[in-house]
Length: 256
Length: 226
Ligand code: FES
Image (cartoon, rainbow over all chains, first blue to last red; front, side, top):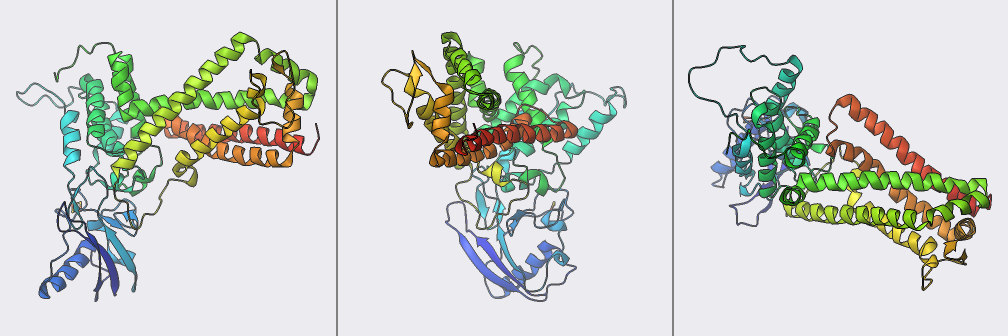
């Protein structure tokens, strides 16, 4: 098939950037979206032009490196699918596609479709961990975990930090990401001792990074390749309120 | 006090303040509408109700609560809208809504409309009773500072232009309440799927009650049925 692509090109952080239109011929429906871009780039390089920069690593939908907006939807038209796992059979001959990077102040564009997502790393650094005494590995099953908590925690832990939630949110809010990272640890007994301080610090960091706030639109949940539920955001709010308003001086703060 | 300040400074904290004040204001619109249904039972009930609301403690207590809530609701929202406007300096050329609705995306527009409605409503039916008598009303009547609630209401809404204004204003209010009521449940931490489905149903029913009731009152007045 033959496609027309309108791609955002930007040389660096300070460049203004703009759209460029390219044609790609002989696209096979078996190609992944990124393979299709590889073909485009080969063509560009053979003409001595700059290839389109996009981020990728595993190409298996598990690392969270890839991602851009295709025709107004983060990661393209398939639900629960990253662009590296999106195949060209989702498109048809003659399609006109607009490719844009994630757009958020907290995600500065580095080049073309690549954005700097280190704001996410700093949110995790603020509290997305469990403090334990080092030593030999503890006995398995020594800490019993309730089945429903284990399930919900695993669901939240599926977050790969790709940034699609921020990209799709009309407010550029990182609430779904932060809430997933919080739910992952807060629901487990191992994460319980630091639940409140963790919630407080990660929400604070999310604000510092300059993300917007959540107005419960729900666009994030739909495009999340891992199907993280917006209900985690309500849990985050609850923990945050408890941490800031309802808990007296926090004695158990082992992170201080 | 420090913890209150840092709570307010965070986006989640501000959201909670906006949600709690929103919840109170929703309840206020509901009871306000229910009280006004007495227009259907005649001038006696309506005027007695008006006189009760003009008891100083009820009047000033209510005014203090409502105006504080409105103030916090607006200040919080403006703060959040500013943060969010800064969060995406450059928008998309193409962006397709996935789950967000017309109602959820127009909250910041229906909000100011509701405020305009509120101010006009005060000028219509409240300020006439205050010293100075500023009233946006065809013929405002009162005795000893207590307005003649029934006559004032029916005279105002008997005018088709004012009735049209009230109906349009109530639709804007409805859009705002509908997303607002559901959204604040989530903001305040309601997270179960079943609870949320129930919340959506209750939010829809209550919104329909408020808007439906107000429009019924307006229609009855403009058609001179009461
Ligand atoms: S490249 Fe790893 S998730 Fe797409």
